[in-house]
Image (tube, rainbow, N blue to C red):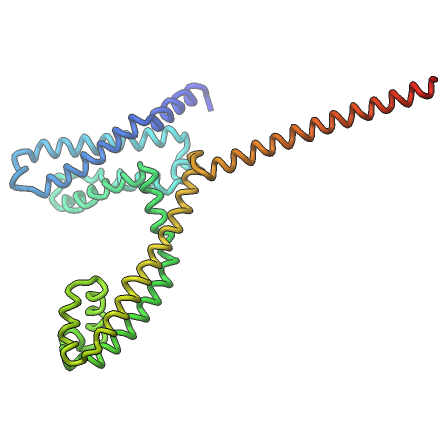
Length: 289
């Protein structure tokens, strides 16, 4: 790799990592989102339609230049596409190059431009951490969801058997009963359902309260605990990557302790060598005497 190329790559890398440049890119993403939102007010913005098209074109060109700068800063396409967020940004930017003037493609172009707002996630590490924690929590939450489905199914079957004659619209079959239980779990006017069945079965409050206790309190808190656990691990990994936090301080402390031990070993070896030399010198003098 020649020297001029190295110089340009260093310049692009410096520009990419510049905080003001990152803040400017985030501002453009926000402006892009506002432009998309403004286009939904067709009557109010009809007189500014041409200016909005120019602004959208300018934003698209800026995003294209920005992604090219990031590719140039990496110095290699392979290295650039190794990171998943770079692939995501590249797809979003290239997809937004679809022209808006074609009547057949205008709807697709507008839908693709909406996803440019998601670039905020790729620009802000904290949002990446949150999204990564959410994705990694899904497999662990799957077992909780499966257990919740079993509980829903059992309670729906019981509710259908007991309350179908009272209100067939809410308890007519097991599928409708599961929808009714979902409404109860979200606390959407669930007391109205309770009062209707309680007129016939005075003990029906036990059915509702036990279901709410299991779903709204136990299972919901289990999911929250899983997400918090994954978020804590992701936060520790992010702090380690950014040389921040308790994890990095522990690493530094271990390194310093290792250095002190090495220095003590060297001092001990030096002192041992000096003691051996002094002993040999003493023996030689004793022999000479």
